[in-house]
Structures are given as C-alpha cells and as structure tokens.
Image (cartoon, rainbow, N blue to C red; front, side, top):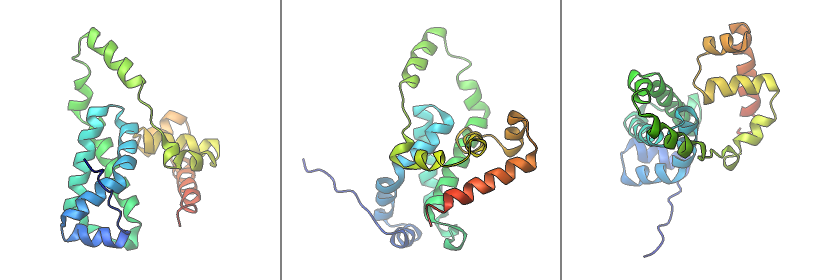
Length: 183
C-alpha cells in the first residue's frame, strides 16, 4: 500500500478552502496542524482520550467558524490555537471532567497513572520549548499556569501571590517577546 502524501497548503489557500468547506481543507488542516494542536490540548487536559475528543471538537469548531476568522486579528495558527486552548480549558472546568476520575476503582487508577506518566509531551518538536526558555523565569511561570495549565489571570495571581496587574503585564511582555520569533 502506498504511503499517503501529506497535504500542505499555504495559509491563504487553507483559509479559502476552509471557507468553501472543501474536503482538501479538512485533510490539510489535519495533516498540517493536528500534532501541534493535540500537544497543546494534551498539556492542558493531561488525558489521551479527552485530548483526542477535544481535538475533534476543535476541528469541528474551526470548520464551522472559518468564516469568522480575520487575518487582521492574527495568524490562522494563532486563531486555531486559541480555539484549542479555550475548548481544552472548558473541558477541564466541566463537571463531567471533574467527576470522571472520582468514580474509578483504586486498581484502575494505578494503571491509569502508570499509563499517563509514560506519555511525553515534546514541545521541542514545535520549537516552543526553546522559545519559552528565552523568557525570564517569572514570565515562564505565568505562561505555564495560564496557557498550559488553564489558570485564569486571577487564579495565576493567587497561585503566585502577586497582583493581577503584574500578571497581565508580565504575560503581555512575554507574548510580545515570543511574537518577535514568528513575525
């Protein structure tokens, strides 16, 4: 059986195809972005099955919302990343997610913990880890809490014991610093 060739479209081609709901757009979206989006989602939900479910929800939302994307507000990947992050955070804040682990037997939890501790998220494949390492420690800790652990700005301020305004300022500075690498 021949190996399937991955589809790779330019950002403009992908946006146009998504807006026209062409099959090639769905395939390109998966080929080009599934690994990156899955990595971000998994980092937040920390569960393979849940991350896969959220990724599917992300693709459906991207497909249905493509008309609302505006290049004036940012790059397509950033827009998709925000959708993925927001849906993952919504998932971990949901009652169903919080209750799903409370009802498991002890034996199941041991296997579950062993299985998930062996899963490795590799941001270095995306280059994100190297970029984040260039930030000051106080910026890295805020990014980790807000973007990877799903904390709100207020929760991050409480966790770190610093004022909300300081959280917002450091986060904005960190994002601006990281953005320099992409523009």
